[in-house]
Each structure stands twice: as structure tokens, then as C-alpha cells.
Length: 144
Length: 172
Image 1 (tube, rainbow over the protein chains, first blue to last red):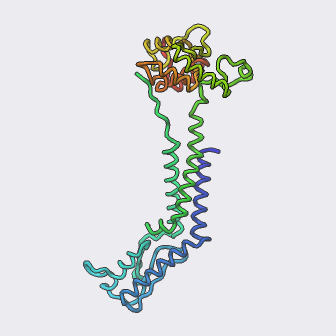
Image 2: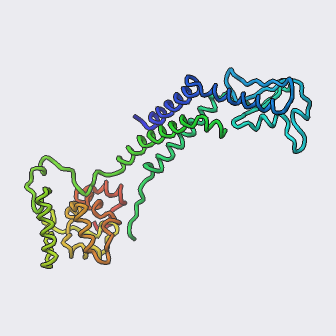
Image 3: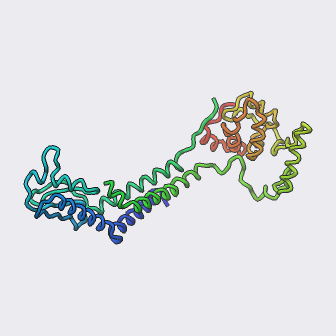
């Protein structure tokens, strides 16, 4: 088998692993569910009524969309004080936070793509270690 | 991103292990291909296999006998392992080996090494024993890979030698 075929075989295995982890095993949905639950807890802690939050589910993404009546100060804060947008953005693992009535052009990657990218990076790190262990040419030295 | 990494931790570890395995698959093969099949020891042939062993054998009894002979030799001050394979025949110019000059060649000659075939046939133990007797040249046999170099020249594989160690000098 050629080196490229070996690399491709490993890459395919890693991509399948990432997809199974994200989809059939349900880790992608669990991750977004956790983000949603923590974000809702943040909203409750702000005492603002009528604020709702939804996450992109088709496809799954770490992108939250807020809706409801809130003024600029409540939304974005002022000086050192954080608004609800920043507070939700601080939830660990959160990606983009936007408001339904304010169109945003921020790039939102599907969670599956992010997961697969991470898997590819981990695969690359494994390959790098393998190169360090077995790939380097032995040094050849001769006396003058 | 940190949280996403943590959430996919197990899958990422498995991906890393897959990378390690694929890397081993890729590089280990390449490493084996780079490594000559112990050129110091010519591959055993059907013709050479049944030849009656001269000197020490490899059995436990032979090794015990050799150990006793070594110790006895030390007390008596004689070199009981002087018989080296391939010692017969015209001497080779050892100075064409990379890293071997006139003094080192003379020292090898003093220790009974006059031919590439002798150097090439040295086992690791024999090479270590010879090295121990090389005085100011101690360590050169291993560092300059003389056994490996001699392996190519004993087989008259000059192209292989040149590819591995560079062109032979004009003294050849």
C-alpha cells in the first residue's frame, strides 16, 4: 500500500470516528443541550423577563440566537459591565451569540465540521509523534 | 474550543492513537528499508550453511568452553580468540574504509585484521572485544561503522558502499 493510501486510510478512520461520536453516539446533541441549559441559567440569573434563546439544530452549531425585549444596555452592557450577550458568550464552549432582530454575518461552522477538524488535528499530532519516534533518519558521522 | 475539545476527549485520544499507528505503519517500514540487512554478515546461503563450524559453536557447551578459554587466556597472557574468520588470502587496503588512516589500519593489522572479510564477519561481541584492544582508537569501530563498511567491500558491493558512505578513494 502506498504511503498516501495509508494516510488516507487513517484519515478515513478518524473521520468516521468523529462522525459516529457526533451523530450516532449523540455527543454533538448533548453538547448543544448543555450549552442551551447553561445559557438559560444565565438568562434566569439576569432577571430579564421575556428573553428566549435558541441554538442552531439543523445542522447543530455552537451558535445561539437571542430574542425578546431588551435595550442596548441590557443586551451589550456598558464599560466594565457585561450585557447578556457577553455573559452568554462566556459560557464554556459557546461559539457565536447573536440577536434575532439583528442580522449577523459571523461565520457559523456546523458542529460536525468543528468536531471533524479537531479529529484531523489529533490525527496529525499522532502522526507527528510517530515521525519523532520512527521517522527521523539516523545521523551518519565519520571521523575526519 | 477548549470545552469542545474536552467534550470530544476520548474520540480525540483515539484519533491521536490512530495517527500514531498509521505513522508507525508508514515510518517503521521506511526505517526497515533504510536499514541494510546487517551488511557485516553476508546473507546465509545454501552453500555456506552446512560448512563445518571452525572455532566456537553456538551451543551452551560451546559458550561455556569459550568462557573458560577466555579466563584461562587472561591468566596465561595469550589471545585464545586470535582465530578470526576470513583471515586467509591477500590483505586488503583497509585505508579505503572511511575514517581509517594509516595508524588505525596498522592497529587493526596488529590485531590480526588484514581483510575486509574479517571485519565484516565480526559479531557484536567480537567487535567489542577488538575495540577494547584498539587503545587510542577505542570506539572508532562502532563510530565509523567499520563492520558495516567492510561488509559492502567484502561483497565487492562498491555501488552500495558509495551510496551509503560516499565514493571510494583513489587508493582502491
